[in-house]
Length: 339
Ligand code: 6MZ
Image (cartoon, rainbow, N blue to C red):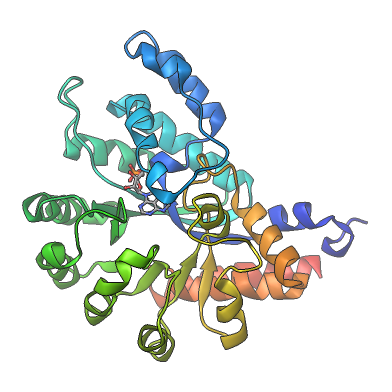
């Protein structure tokens, strides 16, 4: 009989039920889907023929321009629906049982796509009946480069479609652009409207000056939290703010030198809540099961510790206590069947 202890590590990590909380839709499009969309779009954008996703980046600023190409692949409602559906299927195949996708509503004047029709297209796919055992929710992202007016527009859209499984609002985008402070009133509105909030936090040294502003908002989760000075660390630890950890993304985009240096090691020592995530599985060529395998190999985690890591991630989801209990029961049943 094959039990989880006889599986090799990568197969165990696929079979382990997992929670994914930090996955940008357009960064999660797999090479296979990129190819499919490129076939659809190549006549319109001949420059796509030469586009390849690089295997290594020199620095994180080389990452954001990649979306100039990727956004041509998802320039209309049909294409973003294909991308979203395939991303969900791929996470389900990789053993993800609860998924919070995130995306920045985007308009395209040539195709007539509006931010609203973009969001509607994503939500229609998220809410499609599916046979796989996966629950999907959406976080709507506000880009750091947005004007305050654009940020309010995004929050208003989230309010309009709130009953369609939108659970939170995110601050994302080029880490060297914009600031949280000028967008803060939109985040205040999101909070008043009852949305959870997650913020990309301290990915690079230049972000560290704004850390006190971001923390004073009281975010429900933080993305990355790579660079922490002592007061920041104390605030995050004492408030037990869960951190979304994306090891491969950080190493490829060179905000962390090596897996061994990754700050998740401090969280393991401190027993601080964290959730292993992929960030952009298409661009960084790494599924969530691979992130578990990397963490296990790097920090010598046992399979029981991997299970506990996945189980504790449930506490960080943007959902209520009933859903958390249901998921925990599902996890324990898996554990008993696979011990
Ligand atoms: C900050 C990131 C990111 O929203 O079009 N994004 N923002 N830090 C990161 N770490 C590497 N990875 C992705 O997905 C793509 C968008 O997500 C944000 C960027 O704004 C990017 O344009 P959506 O679905």
